[in-house]
Length: 237
Image 1 (cartoon, rainbow, N blue to C red):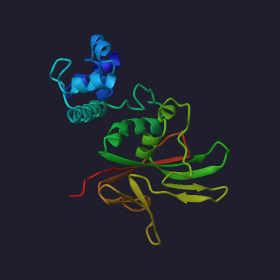
Image 2 (cartoon, rainbow, N blue to C red):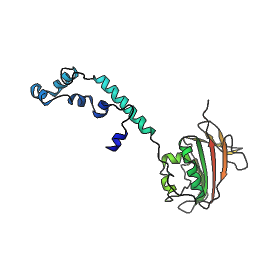
Image 3 (cartoon, rainbow, N blue to C red):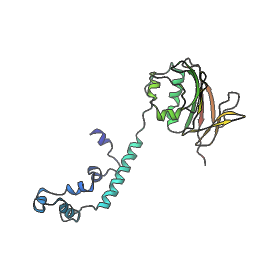
Image 4 (cartoon, rainbow, N blue to C red):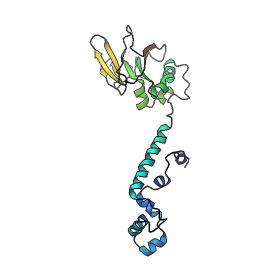
């Protein structure tokens, strides 16, 4: 009941929200006396629709459908305005440099002001050495990152990430994400192009990372090696 009340706000329509169908709306104005004399629910509905029964101000089916659509659009807008709880919210990770760095960036990544690539090199659950470039925003969107911040699960590269390499099996994969395109340049090596502003991030430590981009080495015992690439996004004009 409380959830229903929270959804009532601008755009709330009592008729559209109360009745699932136009027939339900018509039925609400039919009395037991009407049914007793008419003995036909369809006829009773027709009389209500014509304004011969009920309160005489019956809305037409077309208007009802339009109000239903408008009410649903307003409901969705109210839901979308509710801020999404951050995966790192309330998590104490001050003693974990990588998790603290991810926590500091989460809100900006979620709202699109920042895109972040995390390079991690470590051993997977099988003891194999792996490394990869992780699209942090994509992980936030598609995984339960709460488990990472609760330390119930480790952030480890996997074959579905932007780039992945297993040093034991020599398996290598690369995948585009909603935020980045992967570019394998014969001269510059591995590059990532931001799909929003088309800027390229160069992950070669001997080169500058690119416009509006920064490279940060994270000194941590959580993994063998961690590097974070942040890119402040700019919309194309």
